[in-house]
Image (cartoon, rainbow, N blue to C red; front, side):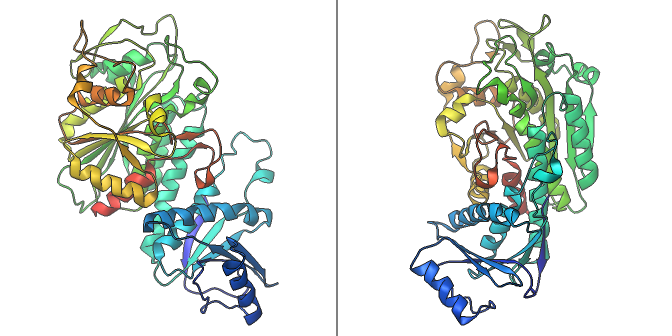
Length: 478
């Protein structure tokens, strides 16, 4: 990870980046009159978005930020500007850079550093020439009176949690089985301070988690059910927040087999919800936020075999609900349902589940945001939506009318795991809602969890979406 730190002063030999707009005067920056004239001419007359000054002892980059319609959109412009500069910095073999601002807004300064660090992420585990391909930038320093050590510590925590989540999503099944996922979460807990308990298959059987066990029937690897808990001294909430993440470490679709191109070939990402929950737990505990949080991750792969569950099966869930299986590729809701039922024992303040659940959500809004639904959590959802705008992991709320619940009623069981040809994201949400009796928010992150083309600081492959969103949500709680 590219480490971020804060400094109070900068030497004249330190490579720097200065955030600016068209009105900036640079009075606090060590530029000659000739350099200032050149900079202002490039910004005002030539409308350049980046100006570079080689001062021989150092290089100064001026990143020109266009003001957005909102403060949050300006921060997003800063993130993208930071990521855009990486190609230049790494091409020049820059190891350390100091970022300062003529904008006088600490959110913009932090966002720019965040964009640099997120954009600098690389997944090189399976590259032969790792050293040759590795980015040169290792350290980002922030110089600004308005930025304090707590700001930087929290930013580092959120970044590390997000990057851990990216790596988990990028790992292939041959390494990241359900068992290995639980081991990776245990490592994260040991590093940051949250507790981890892992249920084996025999324990899952004793709890009668029929959804998780049914999806796992076709696999050669056992399922796991991982419980994370962060309960620091002096925590603020009387009842815990519970996060639930879908942990399908690879999804073939089962006997309802997926096509390979642009579908099954991406399905190592189907545990993006689990990665987001683990990353958020890491960030919250690393930052030592005084909030009691529990994370639940049901995990398995979904494969076809002679013993796999089939369309037409009726399975008994953890809470006793009978579910008719119409499609084995609607498996995520089955394992999530058992976890949502299990969450009842905590008498939670709020439960948030995250899942790469439906292609319908991608059809609805693409990869630029996640769809959301909620029940009994209107105020909490609004706060989460605000955090989404702050970190640019935005929520698009879908209707959650009763008619959608009618679509999952079964003739031979209590409910079925597929609704109909329309409103697939919503009927999936209605399925999950059946297993809740507490304030609940559902986030379908299928669109933004994994990208097949590079997008600025979000990169390519796993994006870690959900970690920064949840972390900001909990920061605002304390």
